[in-house]
Length: 355
Image (cartoon, rainbow, N blue to C red; front, side, top):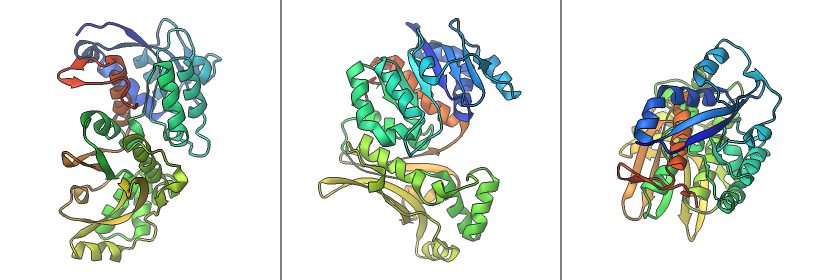
């Protein structure tokens, strides 16, 4: 496929997810050009603690990954994230800064500035989506650019793009899924015979849970994803505080065993649905029938079921975390922007899919 444009990139953040995307861009460079007509040049990379690197002629990502892997800084250029995003030649800003649900920073200010300057923004950061999705959506529309965040819900496993693009024409009545791998791992291990505390410690030892696991086990991570599903897929933005939230800390091994004996598995389920004419969102442990696809999802895997008017239930299962897995979500959004509505192998990818 003919390459029509070389896209200028700016990375803000270059931790696990940013490096995961960079690896994909290096590994798939030829395929991206030949199959998707996509070529890019990285003009700037700005880290949180390891400096910044600006090169108008382009940054060699393979070399940068090697240097970062040796513990070396990104570079010594003096440039802020917003300044880097607004550099001449930057077309896409890759925001892979950590999620901050209190004020959305630094991602929120970065996204506002980039969209205002007619730069496309691709991100895995849930904070700005949670706090300001209607505003950012409107700003992107006004400036004729895209704000895409597929990686904010299920990492590289398509959820938002599946609902908005592949299920175009369907009325999604409910989105219901396992969107937090840490809690699903804990519940799976409790089913294997561990008590809650033992399973939690094992999840922390394996790196699935943070030193402070409250964001996972108290349901906050799943709640913000339910909020995003409500606003983006069902079209009714909600505040995070309006999401009914209950975590798994009160679940015991006996609860898990009793549910199994009755033909159910306990899962932490995030849900957004239309009820009595309004959209509601919730997160809570739920007994899922063994016959339901969600019941068979074990370990740190994620899954989501979309209930539609024309297809009934559609379920997708896949990884919900990981460097290259989340990088894949960013890459798919980048290709959708680059495609700009072109048809590729029978699939119409629309730049304005979040309108």
